[in-house]
Image (tube, rainbow, N blue to C red; front, side):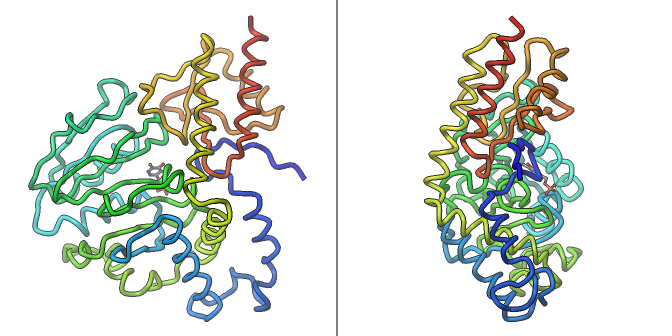
Length: 360
Ligand SMILES: *Cc1c(COP(=O)(O)O)cnc(C)c1O
């Protein structure tokens, strides 16, 4: 059996230990005589799986008791509409920070429901930086402030949590959740599609402070209303049971491996090694200002784009796959989420050095 180092931005690698455990439990979960896929979501076996997953996530992220954790479908993209529908209340505008492709999508969707005030917009610089706190033009009367702490495509990451006073702060953490410890209490709501750093696709996690529930506009579909899901422990309808179970295995794996502090140390080291390899050469380049470089998604270009295909082919021969950059950025992108072992980054760095010297 060969497990490749898969640098995909998502769906992305899962820890091998997690997949092995799922494999061991595949036919018969815990003596139940059933696969988790075959269980009623209302049966006692599945209810215990769901509850443990939530508790382990609460433990790992130190989520305060006054936050609900919702296990939803529709991906992070569904939240782009759910957020204004649920959280505008009697306000008519919301603040959005535009730092890249995912912010833009959230903004486009919000514009259907409210006036969007761009609190900052880094598109002029080609999305290579995050705005500083004193550059944010925040409207004190906004319903909320939305931002993307880590832009998955541009590889741009905030190095601070914006201060928004009494205005609720909402973060699309799809590609950075669980990568290091964060203070959940600084956010009104955090959401993340699972397929980057949580588990398989098909699940989206919403962590929301309970005072924000119950304000959805009247036309909000029941399935998009956070109150519906909070009232029903995310079982108003059939949840994505297997993805929820797999996410639970990932949370348990995180607990067994030193939690988010340990992950943060490893992730910092992985990112540092890769950026050092880029910066130490004239052959590779990354355009993002240093203090906003993502720990999770590392885009880089080769000096000569006509070598891209050779690079990708040679990398694949070394078991380093899915390094092609997003079509809007070009070049390469290495996504190095929690499940990417440090050896994977070491192997990539070694390949980059060898490839460069071959060109000289
Ligand atoms: C991947 C991603 C999304 C979209 O997630 P889906 O689950 O596919 O809807 C949104 N925001 C960010 C930051 C992402 O990385």
